[in-house]
Structure formats: structure tokens, C-alpha cells
Length: 360
Image (cartoon, helix red, strand yellow):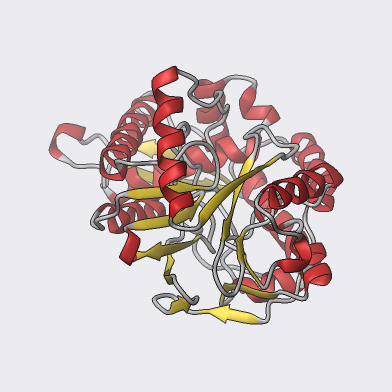
């Protein structure tokens, strides 16, 4: 997500458009269940597909409040947790799958997730520890003070209670069809926001459930993340999350889809315009970061502090991911170079006019 998530749009017109879109989805047997989370982003959208098998896309975080409201939402539609037959997990963030273990145990539902994500979920505690090691090394390398890194690791460890280990019984492959009685969902791997982002496209109804791949009211943050399957001693090149995310967005933009159901906030009815808006935002931010580098070589954390002030400390890893993503765009455009000394990385602008290069 962006460094600070604004409130959902609340104008009468926007609310009316959202309700019309949700009513359209409900006519097709797809119901949004807005589940509370303890996180700044607010409620997470799970989707119940009334079909055979009765299918739930995402679950919400592992909390009593989330479980209670999920049960109430299901009851309002005439269902119980025990009725769920297929639980689909869209990606590895805990606000989307934290209740999966409880739901699977109570319902006996089959659990489906992208191949590769299944291993992550099976050993969730160990995997998040590896994520923290990767994040710690990345933060220290890019100028975040050690005391801030230690504090953030403690916060991250406390968040693990909102997730859970879950056994995936049905690994999904990119491009395969998830076939229900009346719905056929095409599985589309669209990494960037996370390495495991998975979209589910109902081509017949021109409708797609995208989790955090696209969100209407805020930009999805391409969080710098350890690649799926990478171990503790991962020494590969730094993942280029924003570059990957932009490629994924371009692939989504090329699709003809009438209705997109996101993981947070309101439905999206014009995804091409929204993606164009996000692309322009990334271009502007890359230009701003480039201008900061013209003065002198600078660390990614120093850039984040210039852009966001104290938020660069309280949300250090999120803002660092944002900066490094845009630095990658500048490096690819041959506008910036990376300089490392004594384990600390700084970035310096090459004295080339940005008017002669295109940030991609």
C-alpha cells in the first residue's frame, strides 16, 4: 500500500456506483464479504461464490472479530462456515489468509493456492522468519539504522499471530482453469505487490477478482520481498518488485474486463484508466527521486526521509520498498548507478538529461 492509506471514497456518486457493481456481481453469484482487519488499510474483501463447490476467495486475518463477522456475513447469505467446500488463497499477506486454517478445519474444505505459495503457507512461521532475515539485511544495506531495524523486526514478529499455517491440498498453475459447476476461473499469476499475487478471471462474465493487484482508492505497494522458495542464504540479485509489478499491470491493462473486484475498497469498472493513473504516478515519483540524486550520492533511506519524513522511520520497510522500486526504474533507464562501500549502498545520478531517456 501507499505509505499512508486514505479513507475509502465516500461521495454519494461513488457509493452508488460501488453498490451497482456489487449488485451486478451478486447477480452472477459472487458476493463481497468485507472483513475487519487490525491494519491501516482497513477491511479486506473476501468473495463468496455460490456455486458447486461453494467457494470462498480469501478469508481475512486470524482474529476473533474477523471470524465473527465472517460468520455473520455468511449467515446473511444463508450459509455457514461448515458449508464452504473450496477455499482459495490469493497471495501470502496475512490479512488475506489468516483464518484459512480455522475455516479449513471446521469445513473440511479443499484449499487452493498458487504452486509455490503452498510451500510458504505450509511452513508459515519458518517462512516469515526468513522474510524478516531478508528484510533486516536489506534495511541495513540501504541505510536504515540498526535500532530501527531491531524495532521493526519485533513488530513484524508480533504480526505473525494474524496469520496461520495451512495445508494447501490443491496447488494451482498459472494459466490453468479452476472449474466450478457454473463458473470457470482462469488462474493468472501477476506478481509485484507480492511474489504470489494471483488473479481469478471469469472470462464469460467479464469479471475478475484481483486481491491487491489493483485497488481503486490507493496504490498497491510493490513490497520488496524474498522470492518464493528462496532460503535463508539467498544471495541472488535484489528482486525488482516495482519493475515486476509494472509488467503485471501492463498485462492486466491489455485485457478486456468489465468488472474488477479488489481485495480492499470498491469495485473497479475502468481498470485501464486506473492503471494509466498508476503508471503516471510512478513516473512522477521516479523523476522526483532522480532530482534528489542530482545533488550527491544518497541512500534509499535518506530518499525516503526526504519524501515522507518520520513515516520513513515508523514504516521504514514499506517506504524503502517504494524508493528502491523507483530506483530500479531509473537504473534500467541508465539514469542512476549503484555505489557500495563498506556494505552501505548509495545511489548517484548519472549526468544524463532525463529528457533523453524514458523511465520504464
